[in-house]
Image 1 (spheres, rainbow, N blue to C red):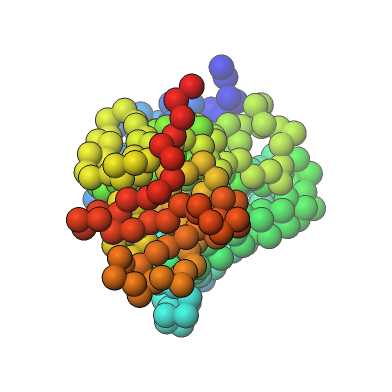
Image 2: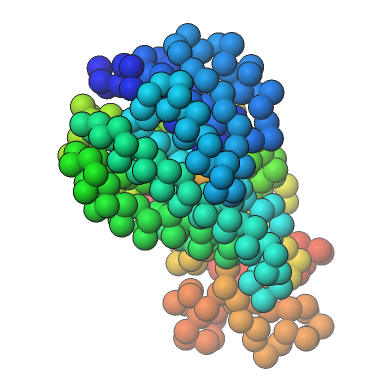
Length: 364
């Protein structure tokens, strides 16, 4: 299918990352001319440039610095005389889990600068460029995250920044761009777990992968190409010319609840093979929390990062026997079976492994 992107000038921020690199390859196949932005990983961009067949240029900039962003767009204009599409993909995800009451102001500001302020500066520079060149059409695709949709425990900074660009900024810019370019469009994509360098640490843990896959209809982690295809689609006036202000989640049907019980599975990933609850088959997670979420009524916390979603965690409350000799008793407050009191499933340590009293899952 012809996307109509031939000879269009596309500026991709963070082009050296997993999703950015996949975008560059797909836009190149469509015949677009590319501005490949990078900052610290320019070596990867040079390697990428060697495999691309179309016209392209590599430009470096710190997107948190106003002058460098303005210089980036000036250099793009010097080379191509216009910029038709902005893919705002660059961003960071702090690896450490830090609840907000332990989070430093320094980390908060650093994440918001990298994930929110950088997108503001790029969007502003792009609209100023459009004001000068006055093209017939233009498009912005903002790369958000499922953290914007579901939140992400331990990463309030990231979730807040991604929610800001996904909802507030996207839906404001779609009204502002048409004052300059009547057929201009602004949309967002929200990836969940994606096999990128940024998510590599989490995806190395098979137990996390297994639990995450229980929250989505498609039991596999996304490839960068899955997200890039959505970005190319939204960039195309021919394919998506009447779509603006929309948020497209690319996460295999992810929800903030369990969709599958037992072990998940995915191609090219190793499922969890460690010890499980001998009764219900749930995977152990933490000596304090008990095992993973095997019960269909148990909810999960979900979210993501342009490449990563957090592991589901149960909300628990402590019962009257927490300090008993049998070990801590943890209960999920969202499990309706706990409201009746007697007969409630409880998690207890047994020979170092948690086991629950819930009946084994029925097989159809």
